[in-house]
Length: 516
Image 1 (cartoon, rainbow, N blue to C red):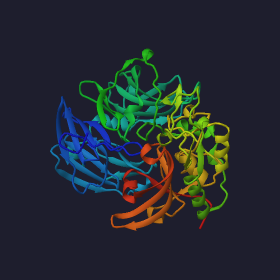
Image 2 (image 1 turned 90 degrees about the horizontal axis):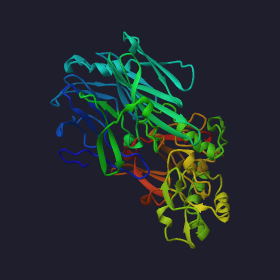
Image 3 (image 1 turned 180 degrees about the vertical axis):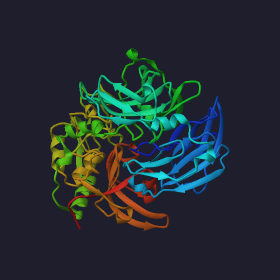
Image 4 (image 1 turned 180 degrees about the horizontal axis):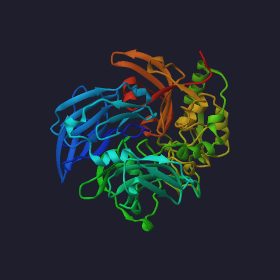
Protein backbone atom coordinates (compact mmCIF):
# COMPACT_ATOMS: atom_id res chain seq x y z
CA UNK A 1 0.00 0.00 0.00
CA UNK A 2 1.19 3.51 -0.72
CA UNK A 3 1.53 6.12 -3.45
CA UNK A 4 4.60 4.85 -5.30
CA UNK A 5 5.03 2.72 -8.40
CA UNK A 6 3.35 -0.66 -8.05
CA UNK A 7 1.44 0.49 -4.96
CA UNK A 8 -2.27 1.03 -4.41
CA UNK A 9 -3.67 3.82 -2.26
CA UNK A 10 -5.61 2.99 0.89
CA UNK A 11 -6.63 5.58 3.47
CA UNK A 12 -8.38 4.74 6.74
CA UNK A 13 -10.14 7.55 8.57
CA UNK A 14 -11.68 7.29 12.03
CA UNK A 15 -15.13 5.70 12.24
CA UNK A 16 -15.58 5.40 8.50
CA UNK A 17 -15.27 2.87 5.74
CA UNK A 18 -11.77 3.17 4.32
CA UNK A 19 -10.98 5.11 1.17
CA UNK A 20 -9.24 2.95 -1.42
CA UNK A 21 -9.70 0.97 -4.65
CA UNK A 22 -12.98 1.74 -6.39
CA UNK A 23 -13.46 -1.21 -8.78
CA UNK A 24 -11.90 -4.36 -10.18
CA UNK A 25 -12.63 -5.80 -13.60
CA UNK A 26 -11.09 -8.36 -16.00
CA UNK A 27 -9.89 -6.97 -19.31
CA UNK A 28 -9.62 -8.64 -22.70
CA UNK A 29 -5.87 -9.30 -22.29
CA UNK A 30 -6.38 -11.40 -19.16
CA UNK A 31 -5.33 -8.67 -16.73
CA UNK A 32 -7.20 -7.72 -13.60
CA UNK A 33 -7.73 -3.96 -13.77
CA UNK A 34 -7.89 -2.19 -10.39
CA UNK A 35 -9.11 1.41 -10.28
CA UNK A 36 -6.95 3.18 -7.68
CA UNK A 37 -8.91 6.34 -6.95
CA UNK A 38 -6.47 7.52 -4.26
CA UNK A 39 -3.51 7.62 -6.66
CA UNK A 40 -5.65 8.27 -9.75
CA UNK A 41 -4.49 5.34 -11.85
CA UNK A 42 -5.48 1.94 -13.20
CA UNK A 43 -3.26 -0.90 -11.98
CA UNK A 44 -3.12 -3.97 -14.25
CA UNK A 45 -2.21 -7.22 -12.48
CA UNK A 46 -1.27 -10.38 -14.39
CA UNK A 47 0.67 -13.41 -13.03
CA UNK A 48 2.51 -11.31 -10.50
CA UNK A 49 3.41 -8.50 -12.90
CA UNK A 50 2.09 -4.96 -12.58
CA UNK A 51 1.50 -2.23 -15.12
CA UNK A 52 0.03 1.20 -14.45
CA UNK A 53 -2.10 3.56 -16.51
CA UNK A 54 -2.23 7.11 -15.08
CA UNK A 55 -5.62 8.75 -15.37
CA UNK A 56 -5.95 12.06 -17.25
CA UNK A 57 -5.59 15.19 -15.13
CA UNK A 58 -9.10 16.30 -16.05
CA UNK A 59 -10.66 13.21 -14.47
CA UNK A 60 -12.31 14.38 -11.23
CA UNK A 61 -12.56 11.82 -8.41
CA UNK A 62 -12.63 8.50 -10.32
CA UNK A 63 -15.43 6.24 -9.08
CA UNK A 64 -15.99 3.27 -11.41
CA UNK A 65 -14.41 1.34 -14.26
CA UNK A 66 -15.53 -1.00 -17.04
CA UNK A 67 -13.16 -2.94 -19.26
CA UNK A 68 -13.63 -3.00 -23.03
CA UNK A 69 -11.84 -5.03 -25.69
CA UNK A 70 -9.23 -2.35 -26.37
CA UNK A 71 -9.35 -0.17 -23.30
CA UNK A 72 -11.31 1.12 -20.34
CA UNK A 73 -14.27 3.36 -19.51
CA UNK A 74 -13.78 5.37 -16.30
CA UNK A 75 -16.47 7.45 -14.57
CA UNK A 76 -15.84 10.37 -12.22
CA UNK A 77 -17.87 11.70 -9.31
CA UNK A 78 -19.12 14.73 -11.28
CA UNK A 79 -20.46 12.74 -14.23
CA UNK A 80 -17.34 12.70 -16.38
CA UNK A 81 -16.83 9.51 -18.41
CA UNK A 82 -13.55 8.93 -20.26
CA UNK A 83 -12.51 6.25 -22.71
CA UNK A 84 -8.86 5.22 -22.50
CA UNK A 85 -7.06 2.77 -24.75
CA UNK A 86 -4.90 -0.02 -23.36
CA UNK A 87 -1.89 2.32 -23.29
CA UNK A 88 -3.75 5.02 -21.38
CA UNK A 89 -4.32 7.38 -24.29
CA UNK A 90 -7.49 9.43 -24.00
CA UNK A 91 -9.82 8.46 -26.85
CA UNK A 92 -12.99 10.33 -26.02
CA UNK A 93 -14.94 11.97 -23.20
CA UNK A 94 -18.55 12.61 -22.30
CA UNK A 95 -20.22 14.66 -19.61
CA UNK A 96 -23.41 13.66 -17.83
CA UNK A 97 -25.01 16.07 -15.37
CA UNK A 98 -24.56 14.62 -11.91
CA UNK A 99 -24.59 16.24 -8.49
CA UNK A 100 -22.04 14.36 -6.32
CA UNK A 101 -24.11 15.21 -3.27
CA UNK A 102 -26.64 12.66 -4.54
CA UNK A 103 -24.19 9.79 -4.15
CA UNK A 104 -21.44 8.07 -6.10
CA UNK A 105 -21.86 6.92 -9.68
CA UNK A 106 -21.58 3.52 -11.36
CA UNK A 107 -21.29 2.62 -15.04
CA UNK A 108 -23.70 0.10 -16.50
CA UNK A 109 -23.67 -1.19 -20.09
CA UNK A 110 -27.20 -1.28 -21.46
CA UNK A 111 -26.09 -2.73 -24.82
CA UNK A 112 -22.85 -3.56 -26.60
CA UNK A 113 -22.64 0.06 -27.77
CA UNK A 114 -24.35 2.05 -24.98
CA UNK A 115 -23.36 3.04 -21.46
CA UNK A 116 -25.53 4.35 -18.67
CA UNK A 117 -24.39 6.28 -15.61
CA UNK A 118 -26.35 5.58 -12.44
CA UNK A 119 -26.19 7.26 -9.04
CA UNK A 120 -26.72 5.43 -5.77
CA UNK A 121 -30.03 7.28 -5.48
CA UNK A 122 -31.27 5.45 -8.61
CA UNK A 123 -31.05 8.27 -11.15
CA UNK A 124 -29.64 7.21 -14.53
CA UNK A 125 -28.50 8.94 -17.71
CA UNK A 126 -27.28 7.65 -21.06
CA UNK A 127 -23.61 8.31 -21.83
CA UNK A 128 -22.97 9.38 -25.41
CA UNK A 129 -19.64 7.75 -26.25
CA UNK A 130 -18.67 5.89 -29.46
CA UNK A 131 -17.65 2.57 -27.92
CA UNK A 132 -16.32 1.28 -31.24
CA UNK A 133 -13.09 3.14 -30.50
CA UNK A 134 -12.30 0.64 -27.75
CA UNK A 135 -13.76 -2.38 -29.53
CA UNK A 136 -17.00 -2.43 -27.59
CA UNK A 137 -17.63 -3.72 -24.08
CA UNK A 138 -16.88 -7.24 -22.98
CA UNK A 139 -19.92 -9.34 -23.78
CA UNK A 140 -20.28 -10.90 -20.33
CA UNK A 141 -20.81 -7.47 -18.82
CA UNK A 142 -23.52 -6.56 -21.33
CA UNK A 143 -25.43 -9.80 -20.78
CA UNK A 144 -25.21 -9.41 -17.00
CA UNK A 145 -26.64 -5.90 -17.08
CA UNK A 146 -29.71 -7.13 -18.95
CA UNK A 147 -31.07 -9.25 -16.10
CA UNK A 148 -34.09 -7.68 -14.42
CA UNK A 149 -35.74 -8.86 -11.17
CA UNK A 150 -39.25 -10.25 -11.50
CA UNK A 151 -41.96 -10.75 -8.86
CA UNK A 152 -41.20 -13.83 -6.74
CA UNK A 153 -43.60 -16.21 -5.03
CA UNK A 154 -41.97 -16.02 -1.60
CA UNK A 155 -39.36 -13.99 0.38
CA UNK A 156 -36.85 -16.86 0.05
CA UNK A 157 -37.03 -16.84 -3.77
CA UNK A 158 -35.94 -14.46 -6.50
CA UNK A 159 -36.34 -14.49 -10.28
CA UNK A 160 -34.05 -12.77 -12.80
CA UNK A 161 -34.93 -12.55 -16.51
CA UNK A 162 -32.91 -11.35 -19.51
CA UNK A 163 -35.10 -10.97 -22.60
CA UNK A 164 -32.05 -10.80 -24.90
CA UNK A 165 -30.81 -14.30 -24.00
CA UNK A 166 -31.94 -17.45 -25.78
CA UNK A 167 -31.89 -20.74 -23.89
CA UNK A 168 -32.18 -21.79 -20.23
CA UNK A 169 -30.14 -18.88 -18.88
CA UNK A 170 -32.83 -16.49 -20.06
CA UNK A 171 -34.35 -17.03 -16.60
CA UNK A 172 -32.42 -17.59 -13.36
CA UNK A 173 -34.35 -18.81 -10.32
CA UNK A 174 -32.67 -18.15 -6.98
CA UNK A 175 -33.68 -20.10 -3.88
CA UNK A 176 -32.40 -19.50 -0.35
CA UNK A 177 -32.84 -20.95 3.12
CA UNK A 178 -33.17 -17.32 4.31
CA UNK A 179 -34.93 -14.18 3.19
CA UNK A 180 -33.52 -12.71 -0.02
CA UNK A 181 -33.06 -8.94 0.13
CA UNK A 182 -31.14 -8.42 -3.12
CA UNK A 183 -29.77 -10.25 -6.16
CA UNK A 184 -27.42 -9.21 -8.95
CA UNK A 185 -25.85 -11.02 -11.89
CA UNK A 186 -22.12 -10.30 -11.72
CA UNK A 187 -21.35 -11.76 -15.15
CA UNK A 188 -22.97 -14.14 -17.59
CA UNK A 189 -22.60 -15.76 -21.00
CA UNK A 190 -24.58 -18.50 -22.71
CA UNK A 191 -22.80 -21.27 -20.77
CA UNK A 192 -22.81 -20.08 -17.17
CA UNK A 193 -23.52 -17.17 -14.84
CA UNK A 194 -22.32 -15.84 -11.49
CA UNK A 195 -25.02 -14.41 -9.25
CA UNK A 196 -24.54 -12.54 -5.98
CA UNK A 197 -27.36 -12.95 -3.45
CA UNK A 198 -27.91 -10.79 -0.38
CA UNK A 199 -29.63 -12.82 2.35
CA UNK A 200 -30.83 -11.98 5.86
CA UNK A 201 -32.33 -13.68 8.88
CA UNK A 202 -33.81 -12.45 12.13
CA UNK A 203 -33.39 -15.57 14.29
CA UNK A 204 -31.59 -16.61 16.39
CA UNK A 205 -29.91 -13.21 15.88
CA UNK A 206 -30.31 -10.61 13.12
CA UNK A 207 -27.65 -11.20 10.49
CA UNK A 208 -26.88 -10.47 6.85
CA UNK A 209 -24.99 -12.61 4.31
CA UNK A 210 -23.66 -12.43 0.75
CA UNK A 211 -23.57 -15.64 -1.29
CA UNK A 212 -22.03 -16.06 -4.73
CA UNK A 213 -23.64 -18.83 -6.78
CA UNK A 214 -22.42 -20.36 -10.05
CA UNK A 215 -25.20 -21.39 -12.47
CA UNK A 216 -24.53 -23.81 -15.33
CA UNK A 217 -25.79 -23.68 -18.94
CA UNK A 218 -29.12 -25.14 -17.76
CA UNK A 219 -29.58 -22.35 -15.19
CA UNK A 220 -28.98 -24.76 -12.30
CA UNK A 221 -26.83 -23.72 -9.29
CA UNK A 222 -23.77 -25.97 -9.07
CA UNK A 223 -21.34 -24.29 -6.65
CA UNK A 224 -21.49 -21.42 -4.19
CA UNK A 225 -19.41 -19.44 -1.70
CA UNK A 226 -20.21 -17.09 1.14
CA UNK A 227 -18.10 -13.96 1.19
CA UNK A 228 -16.72 -12.47 4.40
CA UNK A 229 -17.00 -8.84 5.47
CA UNK A 230 -13.34 -8.28 4.56
CA UNK A 231 -14.40 -8.28 0.91
CA UNK A 232 -16.46 -5.11 1.34
CA UNK A 233 -14.02 -2.41 2.38
CA UNK A 234 -13.43 1.06 1.00
CA UNK A 235 -16.75 1.66 -0.74
CA UNK A 236 -15.75 -0.73 -3.53
CA UNK A 237 -18.07 -0.41 -6.54
CA UNK A 238 -17.22 -3.79 -8.09
CA UNK A 239 -15.99 -6.29 -5.51
CA UNK A 240 -15.71 -9.40 -7.75
CA UNK A 241 -14.06 -10.23 -11.06
CA UNK A 242 -13.90 -13.47 -13.10
CA UNK A 243 -10.48 -14.34 -14.55
CA UNK A 244 -9.81 -16.15 -17.80
CA UNK A 245 -8.74 -19.32 -15.98
CA UNK A 246 -12.17 -19.60 -14.34
CA UNK A 247 -11.25 -18.25 -10.91
CA UNK A 248 -13.32 -15.54 -9.26
CA UNK A 249 -11.30 -13.02 -7.25
CA UNK A 250 -12.09 -10.23 -4.86
CA UNK A 251 -10.15 -7.64 -2.89
CA UNK A 252 -9.83 -8.32 0.82
CA UNK A 253 -9.37 -5.61 3.46
CA UNK A 254 -8.28 -7.29 6.72
CA UNK A 255 -6.87 -4.05 8.11
CA UNK A 256 -6.23 -0.40 7.36
CA UNK A 257 -2.66 -1.08 6.21
CA UNK A 258 -3.26 -4.20 4.12
CA UNK A 259 -5.05 -5.19 0.95
CA UNK A 260 -5.05 -8.65 -0.62
CA UNK A 261 -6.29 -10.14 -3.86
CA UNK A 262 -7.89 -13.45 -2.97
CA UNK A 263 -9.57 -16.27 -4.84
CA UNK A 264 -13.15 -17.02 -3.82
CA UNK A 265 -13.36 -20.66 -2.73
CA UNK A 266 -16.46 -22.27 -4.26
CA UNK A 267 -17.94 -25.51 -2.93
CA UNK A 268 -20.86 -27.75 -3.95
CA UNK A 269 -24.17 -26.12 -3.06
CA UNK A 270 -24.93 -28.50 -0.19
CA UNK A 271 -21.51 -28.02 1.45
CA UNK A 272 -21.53 -24.23 1.75
CA UNK A 273 -21.77 -22.74 5.24
CA UNK A 274 -23.10 -19.18 5.74
CA UNK A 275 -20.68 -16.49 6.92
CA UNK A 276 -22.39 -13.48 8.53
CA UNK A 277 -21.20 -10.03 7.56
CA UNK A 278 -19.69 -8.10 10.43
CA UNK A 279 -19.86 -4.80 8.61
CA UNK A 280 -21.68 -3.20 5.72
CA UNK A 281 -20.77 -0.72 3.00
CA UNK A 282 -22.67 0.29 -0.09
CA UNK A 283 -20.44 -2.12 -2.02
CA UNK A 284 -22.57 -4.87 -0.55
CA UNK A 285 -25.63 -5.77 -2.56
CA UNK A 286 -27.94 -4.34 0.05
CA UNK A 287 -30.88 -2.89 -1.81
CA UNK A 288 -32.75 -2.47 1.47
CA UNK A 289 -30.42 -1.38 4.24
CA UNK A 290 -33.29 -1.61 6.76
CA UNK A 291 -32.60 -5.35 6.92
CA UNK A 292 -29.17 -4.55 8.37
CA UNK A 293 -29.86 -1.55 10.59
CA UNK A 294 -33.51 -2.03 11.51
CA UNK A 295 -32.51 -4.20 14.46
CA UNK A 296 -30.70 -1.23 16.02
CA UNK A 297 -33.87 0.84 15.86
CA UNK A 298 -35.84 -2.05 17.33
CA UNK A 299 -33.29 -2.40 20.13
CA UNK A 300 -34.05 1.21 21.06
CA UNK A 301 -37.82 0.81 20.89
CA UNK A 302 -38.30 2.19 17.39
CA UNK A 303 -40.58 -0.11 15.44
CA UNK A 304 -40.93 2.11 12.37
CA UNK A 305 -38.91 5.30 12.49
CA UNK A 306 -40.22 6.48 9.14
CA UNK A 307 -43.71 7.06 10.52
CA UNK A 308 -42.63 9.48 13.24
CA UNK A 309 -43.84 13.07 12.94
CA UNK A 310 -41.17 15.39 14.35
CA UNK A 311 -42.07 18.35 16.58
CA UNK A 312 -40.60 21.77 15.84
CA UNK A 313 -37.25 22.74 17.35
CA UNK A 314 -34.94 25.75 17.03
CA UNK A 315 -31.35 25.60 15.85
CA UNK A 316 -30.18 27.10 19.14
CA UNK A 317 -31.88 24.30 21.07
CA UNK A 318 -30.23 21.65 18.87
CA UNK A 319 -26.80 23.16 19.51
CA UNK A 320 -27.47 23.58 23.24
CA UNK A 321 -28.33 19.89 23.52
CA UNK A 322 -25.26 18.84 21.54
CA UNK A 323 -22.88 21.02 23.58
CA UNK A 324 -24.42 19.75 26.81
CA UNK A 325 -23.56 16.15 25.81
CA UNK A 326 -20.06 17.32 24.82
CA UNK A 327 -19.32 18.90 28.21
CA UNK A 328 -21.45 16.73 30.50
CA UNK A 329 -19.53 16.09 33.76
CA UNK A 330 -19.76 12.64 35.35
CA UNK A 331 -17.84 10.23 37.54
CA UNK A 332 -16.65 6.87 36.25
CA UNK A 333 -17.41 4.67 39.25
CA UNK A 334 -15.90 1.22 39.59
CA UNK A 335 -19.23 -0.40 38.79
CA UNK A 336 -19.38 1.58 35.52
CA UNK A 337 -15.78 0.69 34.73
CA UNK A 338 -15.97 -3.12 34.75
CA UNK A 339 -18.35 -5.98 35.54
CA UNK A 340 -16.96 -9.25 36.85
CA UNK A 341 -18.99 -11.24 34.33
CA UNK A 342 -18.12 -9.06 31.30
CA UNK A 343 -14.77 -9.27 29.53
CA UNK A 344 -13.36 -6.10 28.00
CA UNK A 345 -13.15 -7.65 24.52
CA UNK A 346 -14.95 -7.26 21.20
CA UNK A 347 -15.40 -10.75 19.71
CA UNK A 348 -19.04 -11.06 18.56
CA UNK A 349 -21.36 -12.74 19.08
CA UNK A 350 -20.21 -14.03 22.48
CA UNK A 351 -18.23 -11.01 23.67
CA UNK A 352 -19.71 -7.67 22.72
CA UNK A 353 -18.35 -5.06 25.15
CA UNK A 354 -15.20 -3.01 24.83
CA UNK A 355 -14.50 0.08 26.90
CA UNK A 356 -13.68 3.31 25.03
CA UNK A 357 -9.91 3.74 25.18
CA UNK A 358 -10.07 7.19 26.72
CA UNK A 359 -11.71 5.67 29.82
CA UNK A 360 -8.98 3.11 30.46
CA UNK A 361 -7.36 3.60 33.90
CA UNK A 362 -10.03 6.20 34.75
CA UNK A 363 -11.93 4.21 37.39
CA UNK A 364 -13.25 6.43 40.21
CA UNK A 365 -12.23 9.58 38.37
CA UNK A 366 -14.14 12.58 37.04
CA UNK A 367 -14.52 13.06 33.29
CA UNK A 368 -16.67 14.92 30.75
CA UNK A 369 -18.57 14.03 27.62
CA UNK A 370 -21.04 11.20 27.05
CA UNK A 371 -19.12 8.07 25.98
CA UNK A 372 -19.67 6.18 22.74
CA UNK A 373 -21.93 3.15 22.94
CA UNK A 374 -22.78 1.11 19.83
CA UNK A 375 -26.54 1.22 19.27
CA UNK A 376 -26.88 3.72 22.11
CA UNK A 377 -29.59 6.38 22.27
CA UNK A 378 -30.63 8.69 25.11
CA UNK A 379 -33.57 11.04 24.96
CA UNK A 380 -32.10 13.13 27.80
CA UNK A 381 -28.81 13.41 29.64
CA UNK A 382 -30.68 12.65 32.84
CA UNK A 383 -31.22 9.16 31.38
CA UNK A 384 -27.44 8.77 31.06
CA UNK A 385 -26.92 9.71 34.70
CA UNK A 386 -29.69 7.30 35.72
CA UNK A 387 -27.97 4.50 33.80
CA UNK A 388 -24.71 5.23 35.62
CA UNK A 389 -26.52 5.10 38.95
CA UNK A 390 -27.98 1.73 37.96
CA UNK A 391 -24.44 0.43 37.51
CA UNK A 392 -24.35 0.18 33.74
CA UNK A 393 -21.02 -0.02 31.94
CA UNK A 394 -19.85 3.32 30.56
CA UNK A 395 -19.67 3.17 26.76
CA UNK A 396 -19.10 0.31 24.31
CA UNK A 397 -17.01 0.58 21.13
CA UNK A 398 -17.74 -3.01 20.02
CA UNK A 399 -19.63 -2.58 16.72
CA UNK A 400 -21.09 -5.26 14.47
CA UNK A 401 -23.84 -3.58 12.37
CA UNK A 402 -26.66 -5.46 14.05
CA UNK A 403 -28.86 -5.35 17.12
CA UNK A 404 -27.26 -8.56 18.39
CA UNK A 405 -24.13 -6.55 19.22
CA UNK A 406 -25.87 -3.96 21.41
CA UNK A 407 -24.79 -4.67 24.99
CA UNK A 408 -27.84 -4.42 27.29
CA UNK A 409 -25.82 -3.35 30.34
CA UNK A 410 -23.95 -0.43 28.77
CA UNK A 411 -24.87 3.23 28.35
CA UNK A 412 -23.89 6.07 26.06
CA UNK A 413 -24.65 7.18 22.49
CA UNK A 414 -23.39 6.18 19.06
CA UNK A 415 -23.16 8.67 16.20
CA UNK A 416 -26.77 8.40 15.04
CA UNK A 417 -28.07 8.08 18.59
CA UNK A 418 -26.32 11.35 19.40
CA UNK A 419 -27.89 13.12 16.40
CA UNK A 420 -31.30 11.65 17.28
CA UNK A 421 -30.83 13.06 20.81
CA UNK A 422 -29.62 16.49 19.62
CA UNK A 423 -32.42 16.74 17.07
CA UNK A 424 -35.02 15.75 19.73
CA UNK A 425 -36.53 13.14 17.44
CA UNK A 426 -37.95 11.18 20.37
CA UNK A 427 -36.72 7.94 18.82
CA UNK A 428 -33.51 6.36 17.56
CA UNK A 429 -32.67 6.75 13.87
CA UNK A 430 -29.72 5.08 12.17
CA UNK A 431 -27.51 6.68 9.52
CA UNK A 432 -29.70 4.89 6.97
CA UNK A 433 -33.00 6.28 8.31
CA UNK A 434 -31.92 9.82 9.26
CA UNK A 435 -32.15 10.86 5.56
CA UNK A 436 -35.75 9.58 5.46
CA UNK A 437 -38.35 11.95 4.04
CA UNK A 438 -40.22 12.10 7.37
CA UNK A 439 -37.03 12.97 9.26
CA UNK A 440 -34.96 15.33 7.11
CA UNK A 441 -34.55 16.86 3.71
CA UNK A 442 -31.39 16.98 1.55
CA UNK A 443 -29.75 20.38 1.17
CA UNK A 444 -26.80 21.75 -0.79
CA UNK A 445 -23.40 22.30 0.78
CA UNK A 446 -23.80 26.02 0.18
CA UNK A 447 -26.92 26.04 2.37
CA UNK A 448 -25.30 24.11 5.26
CA UNK A 449 -25.96 25.77 8.63
CA UNK A 450 -25.36 25.00 12.31
CA UNK A 451 -27.79 22.33 13.47
CA UNK A 452 -27.75 20.50 10.13
CA UNK A 453 -25.95 17.17 9.69
CA UNK A 454 -23.48 15.60 7.29
CA UNK A 455 -24.34 11.94 6.87
CA UNK A 456 -22.79 8.92 5.21
CA UNK A 457 -25.41 6.18 5.14
CA UNK A 458 -24.41 2.96 6.90
CA UNK A 459 -21.21 4.58 8.16
CA UNK A 460 -21.26 7.80 10.22
CA UNK A 461 -23.12 11.05 10.87
CA UNK A 462 -22.00 14.37 12.41
CA UNK A 463 -23.87 17.44 13.66
CA UNK A 464 -22.70 20.76 12.21
CA UNK A 465 -21.78 23.36 14.84
CA UNK A 466 -20.08 26.03 12.73
CA UNK A 467 -19.24 26.80 9.09
CA UNK A 468 -16.44 29.25 8.30
CA UNK A 469 -14.23 30.29 5.40
CA UNK A 470 -10.50 29.55 5.35
CA UNK A 471 -7.70 29.92 2.75
CA UNK A 472 -8.09 26.25 1.78
CA UNK A 473 -11.89 26.49 1.50
CA UNK A 474 -14.76 26.16 3.91
CA UNK A 475 -14.14 24.56 7.29
CA UNK A 476 -16.95 22.69 9.03
CA UNK A 477 -16.80 22.23 12.79
CA UNK A 478 -18.91 19.33 13.98
CA UNK A 479 -19.94 17.66 17.22
CA UNK A 480 -19.97 13.90 16.80
CA UNK A 481 -19.95 10.68 18.78
CA UNK A 482 -17.29 8.27 17.55
CA UNK A 483 -15.61 5.16 19.01
CA UNK A 484 -12.08 5.68 17.78
CA UNK A 485 -9.35 6.67 20.27
CA UNK A 486 -8.21 9.44 17.95
CA UNK A 487 -11.69 10.91 18.18
CA UNK A 488 -12.05 10.57 21.96
CA UNK A 489 -14.36 7.54 22.27
CA UNK A 490 -17.55 9.53 22.68
CA UNK A 491 -19.06 12.95 22.02
CA UNK A 492 -16.37 15.39 20.90
CA UNK A 493 -15.72 18.36 18.64
CA UNK A 494 -13.74 18.17 15.40
CA UNK A 495 -13.18 20.32 12.32
CA UNK A 496 -13.05 19.07 8.72
CA UNK A 497 -12.68 20.75 5.36
CA UNK A 498 -15.76 20.68 3.19
CA UNK A 499 -13.70 19.13 0.40
CA UNK A 500 -12.63 16.20 2.59
CA UNK A 501 -16.24 15.49 3.56
CA UNK A 502 -17.27 15.58 -0.08
CA UNK A 503 -14.43 13.23 -1.00
CA UNK A 504 -15.61 10.77 1.62
CA UNK A 505 -19.12 10.99 0.18
CA UNK A 506 -20.91 12.66 3.06
CA UNK A 507 -24.18 14.36 2.22
CA UNK A 508 -25.80 17.32 4.03
CA UNK A 509 -29.33 17.13 5.47
CA UNK A 510 -31.64 19.42 7.44
CA UNK A 511 -34.09 18.25 10.08
CA UNK A 512 -37.74 18.75 9.30
CA UNK A 513 -39.57 21.40 11.33
CA UNK A 514 -36.38 23.22 12.32
CA UNK A 515 -36.73 26.91 13.13
CA UNK A 516 -34.13 29.64 12.70
